[in-house]
Image: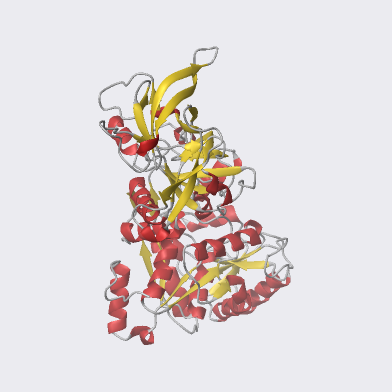
Length: 562
């Protein structure tokens, strides 16, 4: 664990915690929680909250609970519960306790009756449209409900009958009795309970025909768990007075404090749950774990390391305002993590056959290659070298376009990485005139040595044509082609989708990759960082996903667009 006094991630929330500890608040405890609703897959915005809440608990030797806000049974299911737990664990965190808001349904109901007895809650028969009309606007005060003055006994009777399932959905709600003239609309008699008779809850089944609302549930769950610092995104700032009202008007075991921070907005993507749902439903991507999606499931499948996400969240920091974060910042964290941890491999994405005519047909040499040029502890591997190899088509031109060209040309020489220097003597064309094969010779004295009397500048990668493994390579790129999708006036955000966000190639890779476990990450030399796909890759059908390019290929494009 880190020492909070020396943590490099200082921010206004940590400063508040430091002050609380100095003043002896909360008995010296620090208790946070991560409270997702299990109605979908988590995305990078949630990753920021996960890293903040769990990171604070870790650094201050405190606790962080994982609590599912499961008060909306129509939209929630076990699939999302399981995926959220997997996401938190993948990011490297462990929760102190696992809770469901539904664990507290009995106690929440009891608190609601306490509010009724105190004259601070009432059963209201207005329908949704009428309630909106009575609520008023930002500039006009609301009006009292005609049911606001019901007696305590009548409210208790009606609420208990709601609990017993006597009324249809939408017939009645329980509302807090606060102030319909408040300038904060959240305090204008907010709804505490609504009727959902037909819903089957994934934890409680059909036991409850009524369900508590988010603000009510969230606040009291924090109090029941003894949370000290309730951290949420900025859109909940206007809800804080209601949060405090519940704590002040009920006999709860703890009084947490709510603090708001700016949510994550990231270039070249969308983090709206509605838009992400539409991307999946309309077939723009292949599911919630599509490697182009900003979901944690998607970036995990793409090959992003969890330490890169933690580093990214540390770099962007925690502020009191929303802002747009450059995609390059995330990608830099990913590149740095993979550069340090990913073993190297060779893969030819656009194969061109090379026949080394003076090399024995039946000979197989094992060329020794370092698994990582910056980390000797990763050791070495043998790469089989044969008479026929593949090189990338981009590494050959009949005539060099300029003096700086360092790859293979007709009559020119190049070194095959970790192997020999070869010379292209002639080309073979198909009936249409396209080059389909190179006929070459090699210098046997150049294995591990420079050629005598001449300088060969170019080094290219290769794979044995006989022993290389076919692979489907998916070149993933940014999902959108503009930094802020949909920002242009009168333009649908879908029009900004990048048509080149997925390009599929039939490649050839070195043999050892066929045995690599799903999810393994590699740097394909000179090509980028890739991982073995966790869904589609199988024995006899290797699928490799490009995680990220070696360099930022978008920086130049962005500069040109301006």
